[in-house]
Length: 207
Image 1 (tube, rainbow, N blue to C red):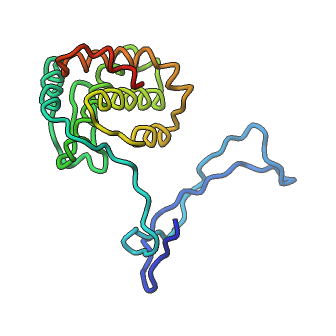
Image 2 (cartoon, helix red, strand yellow):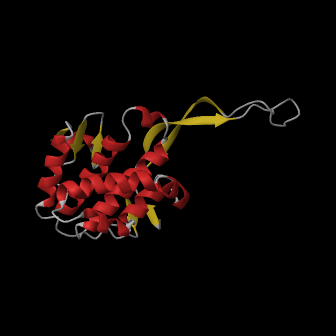
Image 3 (cartoon, rainbow, N blue to C red):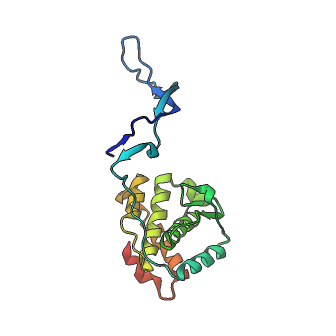
């Protein structure tokens, strides 16, 4: 990242895990031995505030003005019997869904708040009940962010590369999205129908 520890800074001591695989007497790795934790050792790390150099890269952000669609989205969330609250304690996460409740980080821009609300609402609509056991973390995050992208774009926001950045960070790809396309389209259509006065089906061409 082209950043360096400033001269005179003292490292923060942490316990770093020591992992490895068992070796036989002749030095070869044992075939049936999995990687395992052997213990911990002292290691030194540095906070970003102790470094200087090139600016750190940032994820793209959603831009635009959702106007009154945010309030309509909140009303939709209420009709789904979902609790909604704002809590700074979820930081650094922007949003959290926890089985019947959505928590949002206060202070987000209006566009980010809308996108995060859609993302967490999608989790609640798609990933509770039986289907949760049928999906993994990568699939769930890919689906929720794809719904957020479709809905945000449909109301005129500009997600830029924020959604693709997020999906890649979660190890999602085109194949994952293709398998979930039907779920994404149906969920996005349900949300758009609730927050837009016009027929939302035409807006699904953004996916």
